[in-house]
Length: 124
Image (cartoon, rainbow, N blue to C red):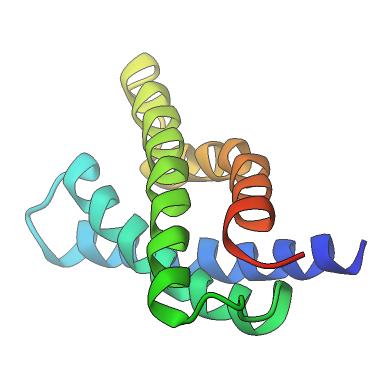
């Protein structure tokens, strides 16, 4: 149960990093909500890897490069789910603010990412 709580904490920090990057990109660049989201997801993925490897799961026995590749693979799969939900919300309900769509997408992707990271990236 502690691991799940730490994962939710790391995810919360990742969500804040994602939301801040998305807000900043939408505020100061000409990027639209779809391109900006790709960049903000990448930033959040980097932030959560560092938190998860130090706090939630502990470094794996594979070494940082192999662990990073595995984390990136699960992260990309999770990001695809996250982005698909985000895009679906924005396209289905165009008046939805991008940050609201981000909340919905992040909640959907959280379970998927925990299962992937705990089973495929970090040692048990």
